[in-house]
Length: 323
Image 1 (cartoon, rainbow, N blue to C red):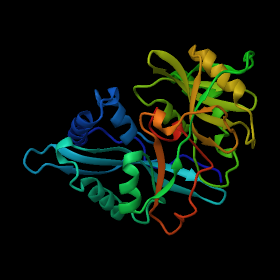
Image 2 (image 1 turned 45 degrees about the vertical axis):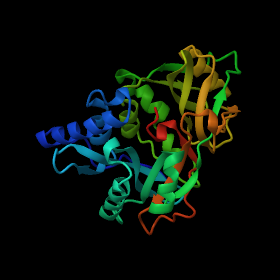
Image 3 (image 1 turned 60 degrees about the vertical axis):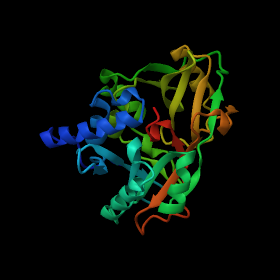
């Protein structure tokens, strides 16, 4: 089903929002050692400038100090399948202060958000580490869709000259060329669920602070990548693979992945997830080799979305917040 840009939009700056953002950042900095939270830019952009709507969040503050001690954020995103289009919430930045853990605050916040959005969302999508799967499934009743496979993919094509590659900077994101390459992203056939990628949402996603993306295009495919490093080695991280002109697969991504490696001057690529129309082959990393195996979970919050049968045709890095 075709997708269109969502409602909502950038919210006007206000003192209240700045205060709330500062409290949330204080908690996130105490929990996550990430450069994302050193300034307000990343959280403000993701929470308040999403074309699919502003963040849905729940918070708990210490009654004495006023400091934020627990936080969850549901970032609205539209998804589609063969029959329909629904608004879901991607769960980001789940955090509990180290001094307040094991008190059930996470579960309390989740139930508050579930109750507040009942019938307004198709459900909640989360990517959790392995330790978080048990409370999600056993206490909240979420469905474990599965662990996201991680593949190392060496470049296998020497000739990549017909693949167009460039940095996804502001000028490119506003260009006719960008609109041409991605304007038919939601024409790709879907049986089960996939994320919607209208141009306004894709521009928002590729403008996430603290990261720089590149776009690679061939006659059949368009890809989004970024540069990662592991122990000083460069890695081309493949974030999204999209057939062009509504093509269905299986389509071979080896040339475009090789082009991404060449563009980033990386000897190997990393791909996490799966893609119905663009299956990726590589060397599978065992869960124990990963710093935190990623589990894809789902909780329905609407009678229109059946939890037991819910799954994704395609789910990749660009569909959540790892990169």
